[in-house]
Length: 100
Length: 100
Image (cartoon, each protein chain N blue to C red):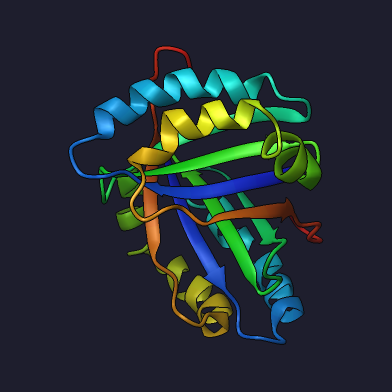
């Protein structure tokens, strides 16, 4: 399992529109093969900032399966115009720590 | 419920030591009032980078309860010397979206 993480900085004044658009866009990812679950949370210190976390079965489910799909074009159209700067997306993997 | 989020950039070559120290340090947060759960995940694109996520009952449980506690001094001693740059910690809150 892989966690996709992106800090989303939404252009000032567009937070409400972004949330509405995200409500639509999330239907796209939840239907993708390899999608497990996601969360969108809003920053307390900066109300134009959001944290998107998506768990995927594998890195490829996101980077290839989703990003190279037709569906990704719909996701882009709904969401990408809200961001400034355009977000850096990273992937994280759970650790196996002795006491974790 | 509030999610504390920090991207931790560990000095090159110290990842293994950091993980050992974190294994100790997590005993400190898990014992704090208002602590709910936490995850430490490692970045796939940059193996010196970690994502720490801690769920707290409230913002104050973290910013006042934990950070102003005696226990925080132990946390600092175990972990802070690993970071470069020193991390920015933010807090996030779940959204109530129509379709989320």
